[in-house]
Length: 193
Image (cartoon, rainbow, N blue to C red):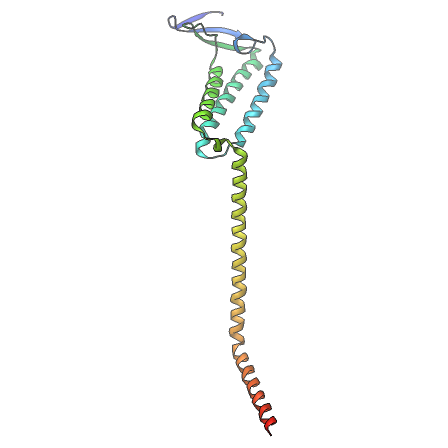
């Protein structure tokens, strides 16, 4: 630490620490490794976020992912521009390692995500493949219903046209039937002679 300012004496202090490693100062001076890992984590978070349905009860889960991503980006910015991460929050009461706001975002996001998954979301909520299959089935059924509706509508138009044609031809049918009756009667009369 380069200096400290007590916020709550013997409980919370502001320190200035240049952390060139990861959590708790491990893996010092491995900046390229951290950048690659951070980019991979961000890509994973974006991919996972895209897989989570847009339903309202999944919003807290997405917010947790965004917290983790925001913390990762915050530390990545320090690593890119300073070549180290500035840590400054120190709980002297429990002698906890010095950390920063980005670390708070990552830890809070992960803890809240675990709590959501364990205590709030149901197993079927987390079965995204099943949800995707159900959605695909629903879309297929709705599509089939629309196709059937239009097929019936088209058939109704054909039936209506056929009915109209039958109505138009009815007088001629009546005349044709009368003519057949007359011919049959005439043929019968001729046979009698």
